[in-house]
Amino acid sequence: MSKTPDFTESEAKLIEDTLAERYGKSVETEHVDIEMPSKDDEQLYVCPAVYWEHKDCHFVLAKTGEGEFASQFFYGPEEQFSTGKDFYDDLSDCLLSTLRVQADHELKKQGAIK
Image 1 (tube, rainbow, N blue to C red):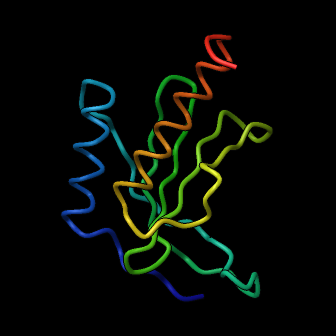
Image 2 (cartoon, helix red, strand yellow):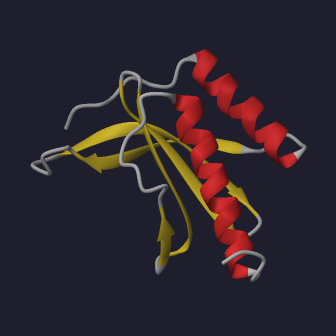
Image 3 (cartoon, one colour):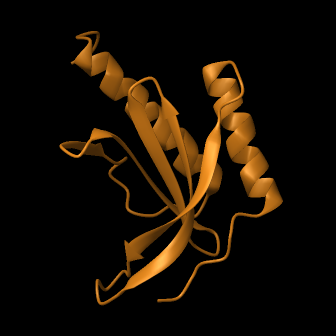
């Protein structure tokens, strides 16, 4: 298994700043390593990821390659979601898309949108 390089300082700061702006306060994050399947699903590889929670939702944003990112959010094993896009070549786009999709999901759960 190969390992993807860690988040750079500027990438980590972008995540921290974006989450603080979204939630109106500093958000505790954890830097973790996760296993991801390769694009050809032939093997697993280790990538760095940032994990955080907000209310009852959990988020994972992974750096899957140099300048490549993936994310998902989940409420439990039976409720896992993504943005519908496997990989992003822009960290900000990946993060903002994840936050938007999750916010829309919450609104749908509350019956505010269809």
